[in-house]
Amino acid sequence: AAKGGGRGRFRFYSSDLHQAAEDRRALEEDLRDALARGQMELSYQPVVHSQSNMVTGVEALVRWLHPERGIISPSMFIPIAEEANLIWPLGEWVLRKACEDAARWPGGLRVAVNVSPIQFANENLPKIVANALAATGLSPDRLELEITESVFLGDSAETARMFKALKGLGVRLALDDFGTGYSSLGYLQSAPFDKIKIDQSFVRGATEKGSRNAAIIAAIVALAEALDMETTAEGIESLDQLDLIRKLGVSHVQGYVYSKPVADGELVEHAEAGSWTIKPSGPAKQRND
Ligand code: C2E
Ligand code: MG
Ligand code: MG
Ligand code: MG
Image (tube, rainbow, N blue to C red; front, side, top):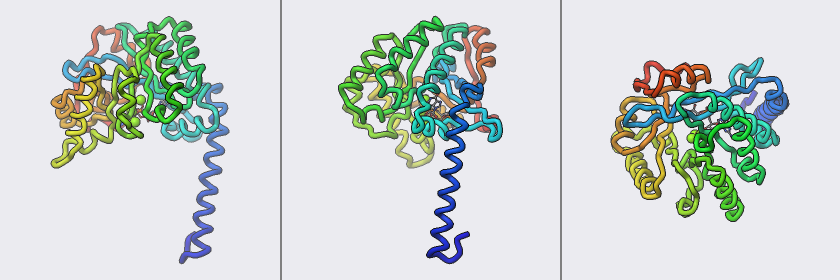
């Protein structure tokens, strides 16, 4: 325990750090076997057209059902997978499973898959995407790859080649978490995105008085429209936020106000019923994610 300061305090932090490192190592070890043991699962969150309430697609979000720790969030284990060289098998599994599921959905729902910058930096990515499409029979225009701004930190000639190869497959590309990375707007000129996803951090607080977030969102919408890209606002939780987002002209919405991520089976039921709309509802019903 940290009594006083000096050496005691040092020892406290040092053993704390030690514990954290041990925890992480244990998690990394478990992660190595998680795929083979069938502990990974995909959840799908509806993406809704903001004016019509029609579901146009879903985003695949991976969950780890750990036998002792319960459900572990991807924001916890994806960074570990990236560092431990496990993102490749994991990313390939996610891609294959999402395409496999989507190929069965009626109504041509689109599926969005998150692609780690580490995957993006590997020249085999287009082949792996092509294989997933071929093996599952999913039409390429029903697959959307979500990429973050950090890919633009890499070699720009290689990045451009990767974009060209992926677009050549006929898949859609979305720029995820827009505005939170090292955004140099220059890259938008040449990068062939179909959609910009406006990060939750801009939505949060946007309805508060004096907030500048609404102005920023409006500017992003204008930019996207000028470049002929769709927009999706992430993390919309309340009816007030939805109202504002609609007024600002954001074309699509993803958030608890419409639906939390759901299991594949639940999607199939809805999609089978024909064109699928969701009635938005405020905070009371959520938080059982
Ligand atoms: P993301 O791609 O930006 O995904 C959106 C996150 O926001 C998801 O968190 C989703 O559950 C959450 N979310 C959706 N609506 C709301 C809302 O109304 N309120 C709040 N507070 N949150 C909402 P999740 O599933 O925990 O995923 C976190 C991140 O992990 C993702 O952020 C993505 O970067 C990464 N991730 C998830 N699945 C994969 C995957 O298969 N591969 C890779 N490489 N990364 C993944
Ligand atoms: Mg995403
Ligand atoms: Mg995002
Ligand atoms: Mg995010």
